Amino acid sequence: MKVLLVEDEVKLAKAIKTGLEQDGYAVDLNTNYDDGLAYATTEDYDFIILDRMLPGGKDGSDICSLIRRKGITTPVIMLTAMGETEDIIQGLDEGADDYLTKPFKFDELLARLRALKRRPKNVVEKVIKFGNLQINTTNKEVSRFSSNKLTTKQTPIKLSKKEFAVLEYLAVNKGTIASKEQILSHVWDFDSDVLPNTVEVFIKSIRKKIDEPGSDSLIETVRGFGYRMRVVNV
Image (tube, rainbow, N blue to C red; front, side, top):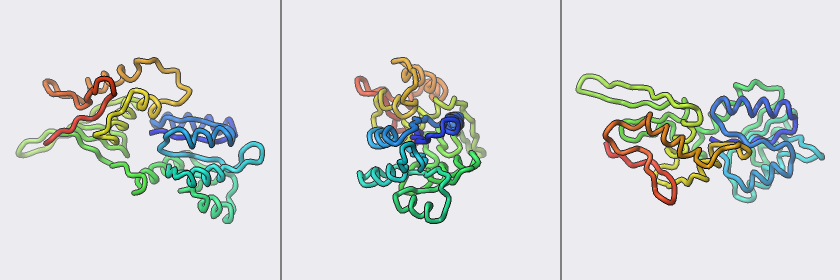
């Protein structure tokens, strides 16, 4: 999943970006109001994390207010030292979904992102199934199930964080063709130095891990357009 982080404290911003990436998120980082607003209104994100106190006396809550007026419903977490009750009320009234005051524990930020993912307005199925393959978007686990008359066996499938992010993106958008450009944009940071064949390499690796011998690949190639998850009837 992809996050926009707008934070002008460079040391803190880099620490948050690194932590989120280690947890499997792709992160675009902006350190000023204008860039933050531009990215928030032109790129597609699953979450936006906004500092309120930005350079030049700009307020991150104005970014939130502006994107809401444009009809952008991406979940927003305000991350700021402005922790008075009236500040929190203002931030939430401007359209933020959550408000976390500094200093904070990074694990709490991760927990709040997970909580936002569970909210109905940001509909993401917790467990997505394709035949006997199960993708848990909360725990970031992939398993294959096999059963007989007496028992059901669950076999974990080990994916790297980027492999899971690619698979999750296709699974969440099941039935929809995702172009290589869309996958790159959603899974990798805007500034990432990725090769043109990066998506093909990852798709090939994922297929080796999730497909059963002798069966059609669960990831279907739609020539000239991209990839989509294959509908499997059990």
